[in-house]
Image 1: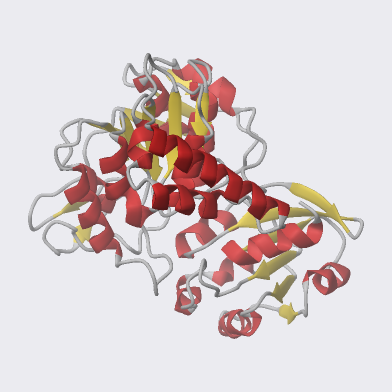
Image 2 (image 1 turned 120 degrees about the vertical axis):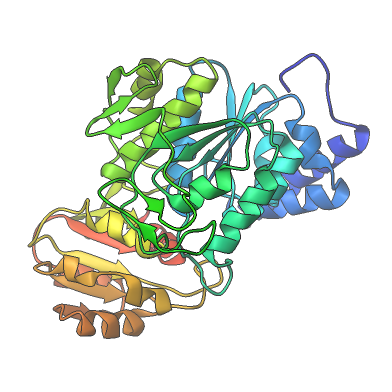
Length: 412
């Protein structure tokens, strides 16, 4: 650990060793990274282990419905300019996975940690973060996650009186309401493409007014705060009004927004925007997302979209028609078993693309596409879809477990 003293008790050291052994056994058995099962074992042996591991680290927590894995990676790259970083880079974002990640960071100065929205308050309580980045809140996993306002309320209560510097998206009313209980907030104008979860005021329930990029509640006066940082086209504007160019290998406006929030976080720790943004350019893909792979002598770009807001962002960055598109949807535990969210996605944005549908719930998706008057083919698997697709790079969009299935099949 960074610092002058070892915070681990003998019991904690035994827990860390046991967790690593179980994780290694899980990997050897071909059951994934082992981070979750290893963390569970370690926490069973020492329930206070997460707090002990975080004790001598500068902890940064990142939470959101969309973009938290990518933003965590961008912040980690930026902060490596100031010292060693430990991070849960593969997205194991509940307490067990976070504990496993921190157990592997013995020489780290910073811990950049992605946190599932439901667990943010508890993880913040255990790790005493120096900084918390809040990006967005929208509907997701309808059978598991709370309604978005309830999540925002959980954040608001959990952050009340927090000593952390909170970096929050000024364009998302739910995030603003959640962050406003914290005494030290830095607002970032990062944008909000998906607005359908933010038409009622989280403070009083009134109807939100949304002229242009601004928003306010005409009933209680709750309104968009003045941002210190902003995304402006291909630049990040800092609190002094200086514009810093964003050069990313990751596509789309959403990732520029992630970079803007990441630059604001890095500045809290003394890393200048120019240095932070230059380091972010090194990120080419995040846990397979945005990778272009060769499969059956075709180029496939792998894109993850888990909920209506994520699908909307993804549609904005795919190549134009007639680029072929493969869509894959599952409804397993990690995805949420309720597929009603498919009806919230505007699939007319795919008009002109040859569409091929695969995945466990391909028939659910087929019905939705039929209603949207899209031309598509239902396929048994990705192999058949690739065989039927016309020439050119294929855009492959999948939700969480469907994305993992695809990565295993195409060898990524």
